[in-house]
Amino acid sequence: MQLQKETTEFIHETLRFYNAKQPLVIFRKPNETILKAYIHNDKEVHFLNSFNAKGFLFAPFNKNEKKILFSADKCRILTSEIATDKDLKITLGDSTNKVFHNEKSKKNHLHLVQKGIDFLKNSHIKKVVLSRKETVECANFDIENTFKRMLNNYKNAFVYLWYHPSIGLWMGATPERLINVTQNKFNTMALAGTQRYKNTVHVVWKEKEVQEQQYVTDYILNTIKGSIKNIEVSGTYTVKAGDLLHIRTDIAGDLKTTDLLENLIEALHPTPAVCGLPKKEATKFIFENENYDRAYYAGYLGELNIEKNTHLFVNLRCMQVNNKIASIYIGGGITTDSKPEKEWQETVLKAAVMKKVL
Ligand SMILES: C=C(O[C@H]1C=CC=C(C(=O)O)[C@@H]1O)C(=O)O
Image 1 (tube, rainbow, N blue to C red):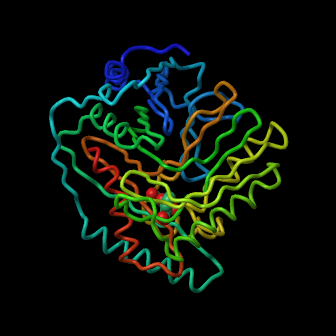
Image 2 (cartoon, protein in one colour):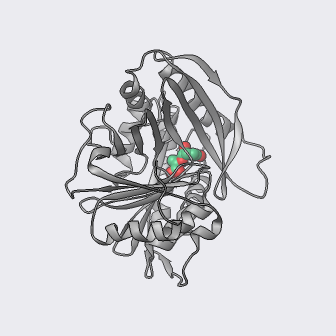
């Protein structure tokens, strides 16, 4: 892997391809310093045909919709190392952001969450993840500074900027890994529960959050047991994601055979962290009641089969930017113990992750 250019120059030059409407992705994995870019050499939309393909994958939430692949053999792949924070200097200029329709969104979300709670109480469904989209006007949107702020502020997240002229611009800083496969080694995580970070990760979690996260862990363990051997499960612990805290469990193991990647991805996505449990019924409720298109939010993205490694992340804490309007996507897990007002507040906190960088 050849390292090119100083970071600021690297970002600036890579984004020239964005200005020229060339498909591209720039990303940095959690706690790493390598910034990598794939710049596509044509402007067609190419879909994934096989999980044996090599490249950068961008998959929507809806399993029935096609996944976009920036194939490694159709891209220029460039890298740069972020040596210090100074490498991500923000150029002067500030933004004025306005939030639209917040009151109406609040009413709608409270109504949706209450409907979700009633649905759970009257069925065998344990959890459903309900989400919304919030629109922010950014008169002075500056793609370069926004991306640098994301890199600076969210070091333990997978931070990305993805663009295709036929699809649009997506950016995000997600704390959730969907799957990591390196040779025959497998890793994933169960992430759920949210509270505000107040200078410590030593916090107490309520029963509702503990249970919600346990559902995710149990589901993953049950899903992978046919494909993974030597399964190891960490204890649950608290992780910081921007100004938020979540409960996390790490799950690792060895693939029983080498041809299981597709099965695992298809089985894990969507995880109960973004959909609910049981998956089929929760998904049906989401499609029938959310009243908007999740598009790539709660889908997944990342490198597929690059140097024998696959690193895919769940597309959370993300936004789509179009004509200086940022659409921020946020949701939360609902159980019968949920309180609509608290669930609304949780989405407000999650939206702040993206608002902070705009
Ligand atoms: C669905 C989202 O977060 C998930 C991941 C962590 C914690 C979550 C929660 O507390 O509900 C969600 O399951 C989102 O950020 O839009």
